Length: 289
Image (cartoon, rainbow, N blue to C red; front, side, top):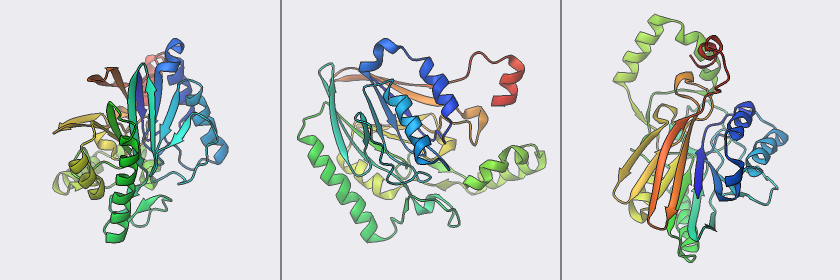
């Protein structure tokens, strides 16, 4: 069984089409896509449906949580597409039972206050934080009744302190990032500021849940500069899978994670970078660098 995890796609439908073409169609029924949020940005309902339909036709299941830039209730009416946001889901393939639970959105402290993002939560409010933890615990209890071989947590936000280190970046800055990077003086100054003021953007509620309940696998995105990073702490393997899109850092874009689960006691995970191979060298440099 293969879990293919993507995050921070930002509506890059053309890249998804190219990516799906590289997959072995014979393995469709043994493949599960996991999307950790920021699937679209400024997309309408039909465009979201196009993304999910593309993945649903290439896999057994598509499991997702919405990101901070996504509509919270996407209402994707496809039988093998499951919203894990404050929800749980179990599946069995090749005799291996997987239990999934998830949390969408991102904590407000991880984005700028003036960003018009539709799906954030203020976990500094004790009522909000307790609500998040209660929801996760209830869904954990539900999924454990299925006696899964692996418990997999899918969130958009990292847990606080795990692959969540970054400097401020806004969605507005994405649009002008290429012009900014042309200015060498700005790059030098920006690098100094980044070194002087690192930030932790992860969720403390998620951290508390993970430390206590110890899922075998935790998949998340959101913090782009940590995309492609994997860590193990205690019994949990953590994977920051942002980001599949080229935005905002071209050179580190096109990342996806493959987790190959061979039996109830063994899995192997690897990151790969998807690059459109048919590009001429000059076109490659223009697109990716």
